[in-house]
Amino acid sequence: MSETTLVKGKGTELAPEPILEARNVSLSFGSVRALVDVSVTLAPGEVTAIVGDNGAGKSTLVRCFSGIHRPDSGDVVFEGETVRFSSPEAAREAGIETVHQNLALVEDLTVWQNLFLNRELTRLGFLDRRRMKREAADMVKTLAVNVPEVTSRVRRLSGGQRQAVSICRAAGFSSRLVIMDEPTAALGVQETARVEELINRLRGEGHAILLISHNFEQVLRLSQQVWVMRAGRCVAGRRTAETTGQEIVGLITGAITS
Image (cartoon, rainbow, N blue to C red; front, side):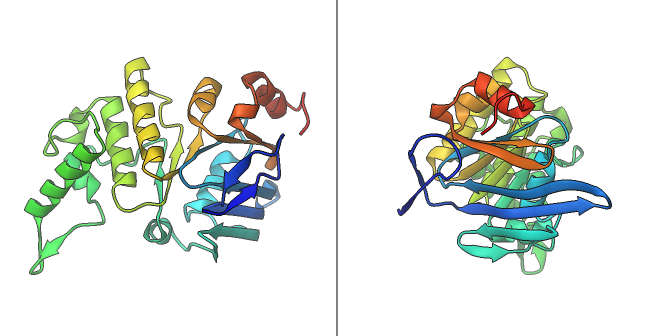
C-alpha cells in the first residue's frame, strides 16, 4: 500500500493513502456558513475522529460524506474518485455507511428485518425470508455482536444491543467506510465497552471508521487520527499518538493554534 505524509499536524509519521478526502469543502445555509474550506483525510484500516464543540460543523461535514448534503464548493474524493452523492442510497451503494445518533431503526420490526431494510432479498418475485434470516444470523455471529435472536423485535433490545444492530447493518454489506455519530452517547459503561470492541474489530478487518465523539478519552483510546473543527473550519489535524486530551481541548477552544 502506498503511503503519504500527513500534512496537518505534528511530526512526520506516515499514514496510509486516504480512502476519503474532503478538499476545501464549503457549504452555506442562507447566510450561515456551516463549512468553510474544510480539508480532511481518512485512511483505510484506521479510526479517524472528528471533534469540536456544538455547532462546529462536524455533523454537516458527515452529511456531505453520506449523501445528505451536497457542498457548494470543494471536492469529496472517495477511493481516488471525485464523488457528488445525490442521496444516502447513492453513498451506500458506493460503500459508505452511516450509523446515525438516532440509529434509524424501526422498533416494530425484527433484527433481521432492520438489517435488510431497503435491501430485501427476493426469490421468484417473493421475499426470501428464510435466506434473509440466515444471512442476518451469520452477519451478527461474524461480528460477534451481543444481540438476541434475529427474530427479536428491536423494541425489546437494550440501548447497546440497538447500537450493535445499527453498526452490524452498516458493516455487513461490503462497506469500505463506516461513519459513526456519537455511537456510545446514550450507553452505560459495559455497553460502551462492547461497542468499542466492535469498532476495534471492524478496524482490524480493514474498514475505515469515521468517529464523531465528544468523549475525548474515547477518541484517544480508539482513533489513530484526530481532526479538530471550530466554527465551520478544520483548524488542526493530529496523529493520535502525538497529541493529548489537553491539546485537543485547547485546539477546540482556540487556546492553542495549529
